[in-house]
Image 1 (tube, rainbow, N blue to C red):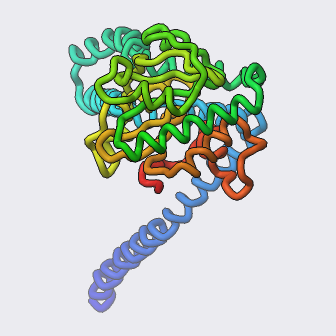
Image 2: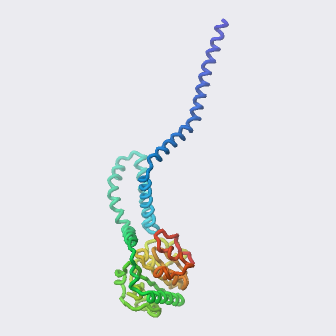
Length: 330
């Protein structure tokens, strides 16, 4: 009876040891799972680095350059808003087709994607055209300034600065466009041809209020006023909408528009405040004085004559990756 009484006691203790061992092994597995995940991650990372070579680096750099160029060319334009809308629509469609079983909707999306791809060149036509123009200008190394002598060029810059200062004092609105490498003949044809020597008196007379030529832009080619009352394209960017004074007139928008379309320099005089602004490459510096205006124009047309203490004028507009908006510069 004594042996019979001890057997149940032995039988009850044996399962408890098995359970303890099971619980211990389960706890060990829990402790080992994070270590196994880290090891697997390190192995995957090592596998990637083993397959990484020079061609992979070049491939990544090319893709990065394409996306950076796309974002840069579309910055501050209405196309950026359209691009955000397209991205949101694509993400929403991908989530709908992947998270839910919608065969009819998935079929519709698959058959609509080719049409959406064909619509991209139509939607972004102005930006694509502007990007191709910038690429073409980037390969132009020879300038056309050699047709104008240094003395004539300096006289033209002084005449523009003097006229802008006097127009600003009188609060007469003006838009003066100075041609550089890109030909503005298509814009000259929209105005009244003059082919006259640049003088402050001539510019003052052109932009005198209520005269036949005061509306529009005066285009200067070299040391001559090619035409007046020229029609300029309006800017499609949102730079002026983010400025402190959002009520900008058509002159400022036209100045930005021609600077986005070509490498020309636009000098604007506000009719309301008399402030002088300068635009180039889709960027605008506002509220500048006569000395700064002359220094900037010299930096563009005669880099060797630009003052040494202000070298940032050249860097501001001469490179594609310009700094942030300079609307609040004083």
